[in-house]
Figure 1: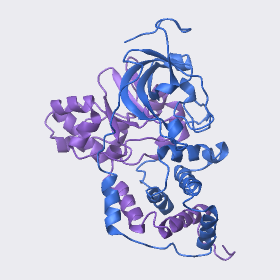
Figure 2: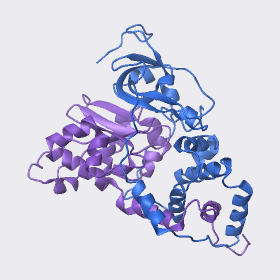
Figure 3: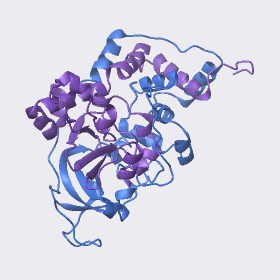
Figure 4: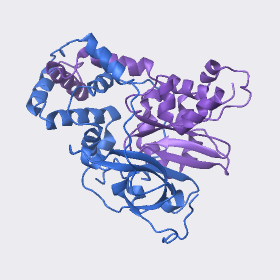
Length: 198
Length: 227
């Protein structure tokens, strides 16, 4: 880069562009595949999918049972699954039990139901601390659990991915699955939050 | 390897910082790296992770998630022989000097990839192994120099098998291109057996080669629960 190219690519940008160049030139990927994949994970594959799973489980006791017995199969019933979700296990929060998910070794996350992970999930602070002091981490993130609640931390060390089934908030008896799904957010399905009543 | 990536229990990273309304990607180059990972490069996810683990402790901690991905894709592309390192460097010099990235499209291929990543699949679960639900196991103290998915913080600790995940590709072998399958178990640990304190449980999925049988009720920590 010449000294006058003050708006040229950064080192990282240049490396990325170089990588894309050699991969495309060799036919190892096409430009529109890159763009279509990005489009899918940026707009189509996200926590709204997991929220639909949760809402279904809240409104259909048989589905809830299937979801907890074989998460992969029950989630596939809704047409969901795929990369980074070849095996999905669902753990239910219930009175006295709270589940939370981490990957201490990298950043494993159930893409087909939650999309790509947020930065805090990938960061050293969360990954190092939540297996050791989950109550303190959850409290800092805004979730204060009663002292008698048992915390179960799921460290995704293999290819099993974990989805947390939050507790259905009180006062939502009149809501249908679609309205319930709108209440369910990413953090509750990772286990760093609960679903609040509307 | 006992790398800095193995973060469970390490102290000193401070508060968890949450970015409100965080976008999926922060920079366009992150989008391109993410997409490039779907290229047809030999070596699976274990080789990908091992490449990141070998990038060096200082580099690992001082670079972002998608920079890790960039290293992993570059490393695999070169190591597999599919992209000569010199070609990658020549492309970098050209791009830095203003050369455009070539564009080649194949709509059928793009659509097939988008469909593939959203197609539910189910690995065939093979026979289970030597341990059953409720068995006590002690995690091996083995500290392999290569890739492993057995974190340091559980090594030597006693846990209880509480899930059988069938027989699954062993990452320790797969990262080096060898295909070895081994039974995979969900194992539950008590916080106080890991950290000496704490009332929570920690669950990990661990392969049979990481585990040794532990006699019931005879441990340095005293009696163990089975429930």
